[in-house]
Length: 228
Length: 86
Image (cartoon, rainbow over all chains, first blue to last red; front, side, top):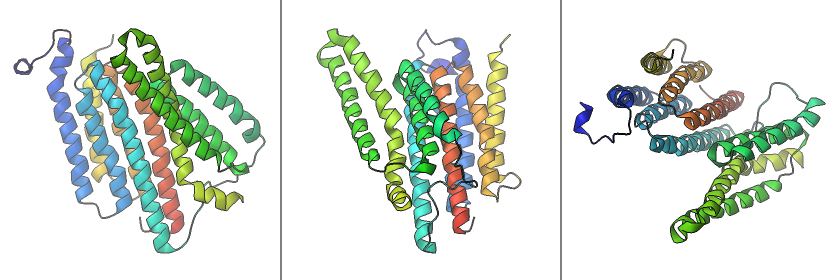
């Protein structure tokens, strides 16, 4: 069945034999998710079901089974994350406008004003950021970003200076430029490939790590309202 | 002994059953139950990625799932505090 498609000899026969079942699973899961969305009246439930559709997309991409598939899954995950974050913010702000009242940015059932939140987050965030820098690239960015997010969220009960978000967003933009310059060097001056590799790897590392700046930009208004 | 077919088809089974459970499973009128049900297909996807040796994709997927879970739960709790219809 798979012989009718051009398959390079480096692909192992196991991966080739799993291709058709994987494709059908992906299509089936996507179909289940889309059908459930079409019967759904509530927007929040539809948003949760989008998660299922994106999982079907992941199987379709993963079925290729090569490094290309791995490289395509990572942007897919980040796009999904950004999409869910943006749509949930839109839903909440629409509901707030409709109801004409506000709730706090991150609703916590307890008041977390404890000593450990003053000392532990710095240590844990430093470890996460160093480990992320050691990994570099996309995964390192995600880990370091988790560290920064953890730090900010733990400190939030004591007040975060809201104008630092502007700086974080600016650094993220500069890192993005580094990444593009790295790619340009690959094509313009291939003999400097090591420099290009490191520019690209650490550019994307800083870029992904500072993606948390997005949450800060969204919550800027509410941070100001709470703390000043 | 690591049999890739067992790993792969367990993943496929979990993904399909989990997505059906998320769509029409018992108690999905409650958005928190629905969100928790999405974890079942996530485990299935992890097994499938493991079969294909997609290590970095698997690590990033686990991190992304945790963050998506946090975003969805935050949205649900905020909507409930607003008193919106769920």
